[in-house]
Amino acid sequence: MAAVLPALLVSAFLALSNLELRAIAHSPGHSHAAFTADFAKTWCVPNPSLSYETLQDITTYACNYVDCSAIYSGGPCFDPSNDLSHAAFAMNAYYQEQHDCFGGSGLIAISDPSYRNCYFVGREEMVSSTAALNTWCVAKPTVADSLLQLNIDFACSRVNCSVIEPGGECQLPDTIMKHMSVAMNLYYQSFGRTDLSCYFQSTGMVVIEDPSSGTCVYERVVLVADAVPASIKIKKGESGAFSATSIGLMVVWSITGCGLMAVAVNVMLWLWKTRSPVVGVPMHTLPEPLYSRPEPSAPPLPVLCLYYVLHSMED
Image 1 (cartoon, rainbow, N blue to C red):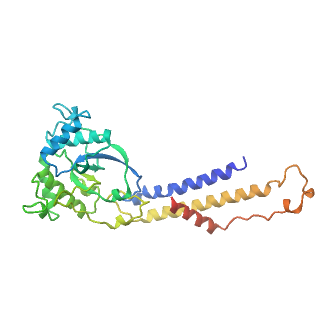
Image 2 (cartoon, rainbow, N blue to C red):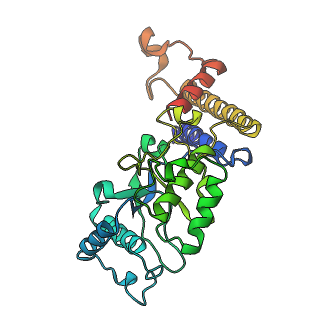
Image 3 (cartoon, helix red, strand yellow):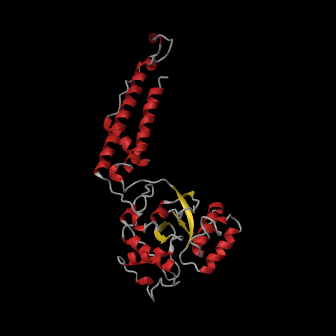
């Protein structure tokens, strides 16, 4: 029973050290900086460069193994009735069951492609820090036709879209969905790679696989935030800078952790001092070395703080 109190205090200290980064991540000053877990929900969508024939072949193949009734007439995913949206549903359904995203024909997305009553099932998957920092923006395969040209016009009014113009590296295949994905990605890369810069009235989605194909290279801008250590995952498009509020929270948690550690050590030393060296045997009958022990002393508070800081860094 004597060891229960120190154990509880040490456990509380360890819990606080583990919660410190989470408190910083969710503090008001860090609305744009949060640490993420290794797992993320993922979906499989077709590469915008696929031909209509390839999309039809993939849909036919996938629907031999999964239930595709949702994309049949009357189903919740029938509209928009085009090859790209139907292939997207079939590919994702196959991916969720078979864990296969059709190689270079599919892209792993970390944005939900669901729309209206059409639900795309997602699954938790381990996402490496490298993959989390390599992101592109493409058009959702279910974008309404009325928004296709509007998105291109908006993006190209702010970035150079010469690559999708006649003679450009990304003109072919000459489909409006392919052109919109290229234009959206140019905008996304130019404006910080944030969730907002890939929003486009909920018609953009972030993928962690390069959609480049042939001569068409989807630009990717390297951000300063990409240089963070692999042990720290920062959400896409969010800044890694600490605000004044975050620094204040860090100091408060550090002082609290040091204080708890000091209390735990001193309680353990007090219990150690008050315990009888040998129960039931008179002290004067024992040889000198058995009951003459040096008095332990608590390590200085700076040492405890150093231990706490190092422990937090390891976490």
